Length: 336
Image (cartoon, rainbow, N blue to C red; front, side, top):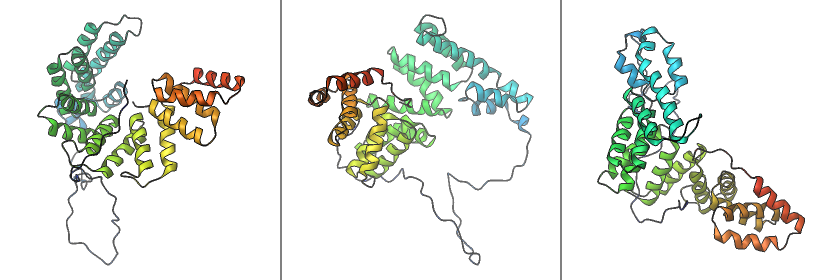
């Protein structure tokens, strides 16, 4: 799998319509009154509740609110009141179909992989209102070439507020290079604000490349960093490059090395190669050869040459130990 994630430079003008929310000092002097009214879309002034009777909510409203809930969240919400328990019954049933769909898709739980049965299960879950099942149904349709049906389910999940559906819909539009690229950026932004790390990474790429938005290295770097902090490996690698080159972030070789190692430890082959080179330059031959060996096994051909140079300088015992460490290496968990 190719891991070319760093975009080419662009001469597009700066983009300023997707700013980060900056914290401001809201403290005021006790003797000073403000006559200016501030409107905030992200931190609206809470309104006093007029009713605490949750059972009065219509069933369809409750179902829409809980459309992207997982089974534990559905069970907890069902305990609020009898009305919610009844309203959420279809979604709890959808979780059963979702579970079986994943079993059939991946051949788990004692069943053989069967894409047709997986799709049928996901569609039954989607019909009961679960956006999780909608996204999985869309994925299968997309994989088997029925992209229009895939887009239909992605959009339905996206409109119900599911970040994964929003992200998949946006990426589908971007991959198709269609007339919907502006809409794709809007969906990416919604999913990013909701904390979806893949959407944050894709939004950063668009900002970095100036694709359908003005180029803004600073905002791109911040979205890379946010996705990296959420565990997205490719974002960790790009965050390291931002710190290393001072693009969008204050140059810091220490931070660059930290994020490069994190990406390497989670299986990013280019990061393994570059981290291995860094260790080699510092004289840590054993660790360097392990990372270079991992990069070589992952397909980084240039890493093999440096690895061979180092191996010639090590004793037979050290070489065997390095290969054993590489054999036993396992990638740390990530949000890929």
